[in-house]
Length: 520
Image 1 (cartoon, rainbow, N blue to C red):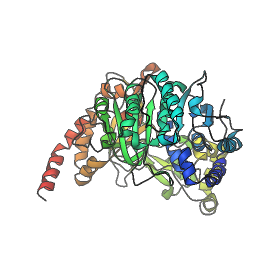
Image 2: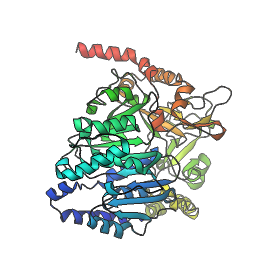
Image 3: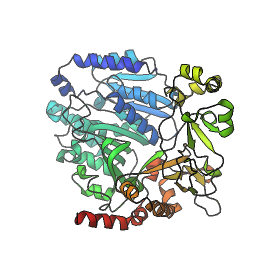
Image 4: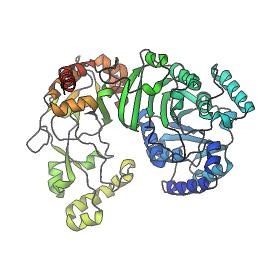
């Protein structure tokens, strides 16, 4: 059963959230642990969950749903046909009433009650996306603490400190609600990362599940205007951690565009009692397990929603009189690339065949109709084919604009098959100004590597050679294989690959830079 939700409802939800917040004093909200998730953050986390969730049907659970900020974000981030079931649990009857009014007819199943007192249903969930109540231990009665500690001991055979906040119990008790391999994204206080009473939760995250990512927001960037805590996003899969696993830690900025990040070996994490030292402890020089994610921001290429309409040949452009200002060079698919080094023509376009361009325009249709009538006819042609109503197009304003993907100097093919002993996936050096669509992964250097390449562009050749030395086994161990020998690697999977050869490619530069700093 697909979930159907109108995104105009999100505006009503925000108004209702503000009204409900006004009914309680800050002290009362603090006691209840009610701090509403900012809409932009909710959508950011739902979109991040979509990247990790794979392609199957989604069974969604929010055990502290409030007015439904994460449910609203879910319906914006995932196509409706993918959402098989959605359930929200909420203790506060006022919020249940509001959520029912907002979402009751959309397919969301709402349950009023205390999540920690509910029994998991027979059909479990494969996506938990939630902001649990930030209730501190001193707001929990002795009897309540005793009950919660007993439940955790029975469910997981773990003993938890009486100083733990309610969110710790929520995270631990949700274990029995999740399918094997299910994905969980929790927005919680970051305090558990360092304090003694967070030890049980840290043990759970390193022993019982596969901890994928912890993003810690900058303490000066409080996510909730009325909460005096810094926040973290904890992402894990319900499956035992594999041998040699590394967890990504990132800090500041957003979860998909952090200011710093590093991959930490699970063994190091288990030995550490202070997780907030990561990623600062594992800088480029200090990391014993350097990965591509430490050196590159890795993104999937552009998803247009209709390549046949938005990616145009020279003949198409000439026929429909598309102005140059609305066109960007874009690479053709990997099968058209006869070399792994894409040279640039004088105008920055790639020296490849066929020459393709991406249509990307932000001008209103009325203006296009008046100034470029043939271009307007092309848009009408797209409307007749329902391009404007496709999922991605319908979520862009205007529908014929594109998300921003600047040219990346390095690319990796998203999928491929091993033939005649060749690497199933290819690394490509893009020396042109062409962007790429979603059959490629785009590698943008960041941090020390970006600085090195900006000062010494000639190092790009050495970095490319290092990328090409990454073996098929390294790539395939992080990626996945489908029937017929089709190999695929996602951005987060590529980011886990060891990158020591890339560091070695610029080590001479790093040594010189260190000497210059020493004698400056």
